[in-house]
Length: 191
Image (cartoon, rainbow, N blue to C red; front, side, top):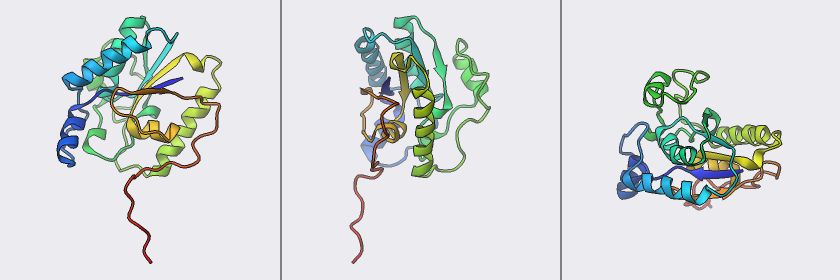
């Protein structure tokens, strides 16, 4: 399967500039983010994809839309592949609001509030990734799947850090990463 990190969001833009949480819940893509989504659709057009799974966050749905449009296949919304809840951008939009914005998507399986209310510890994201890995490995056609997700979930799946709009292949039947480094700059151990 292919894991695609969503395009640049308004949160990503502001956070990169200031390194402070700008307080933007469920941010939309920036113009650059939309271009990244279109570029991903172009790059993935020949990959033989037959299924698209996307996180319910607006930035992921906006990134999945051009791929779905180009390939003529529906987007399946799955909260399992959502971002790790740690910042304001990880506050989602309620199901009823998403349904108004995305009337063609089936959102009936979502709870009204589908994101966590408290920050998720690393191990919970890794457990969620392990569950998704097992679900995908059980499908005979997992190779034909695109998953539009987020930095933290992709890190938990692969141990890799992707930039906005980047993608990589992931074999769910392979072992998970041995070690996941969530924080690049850790304080040295105390003597």
